[in-house]
Length: 189
Image (cartoon, rainbow, N blue to C red; front, side, top):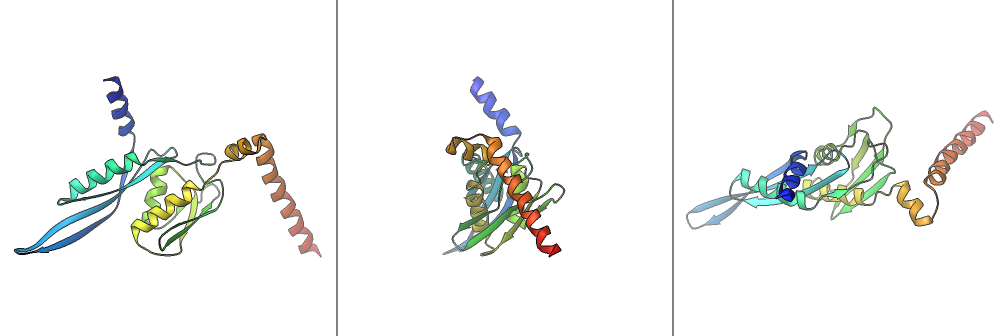
């Protein structure tokens, strides 16, 4: 019974965002039968999110099914300072292609409908995105999750290389400083 309580408490802090509802019709002898398909994104605003798809005869039932599916398929995404991505990344699913870029503090979420729902539920505060392919919300959400799963934190890279995190992060700032010096030198010449 204790496990059930923790499951309920865990679910209570999740936020659900309805991304898209599609009405479909099946033509039968007496006329049309309508059904509904829902796409829902769920997240804890602390680096975990998932998406789900549900179909039913009624909208609330389709949303409930999609929410349950989203909770089962949640993934963890490493975030820099808990507000943005570690690096720029491309994602793809079918004809849907997306570009996600990390951004400085105060930028906000620069993203279109389906991608905005993903980042709000994930807890990202600063990100710049661009949808390059299909505008289909299903493919955009799947492409966004494909890109997010390609995110790698400096901690993971350091562990793979057998180095310290400070060595990896220090190099990033050193390279930025060298690039700035080179640019300043080219301007003065």
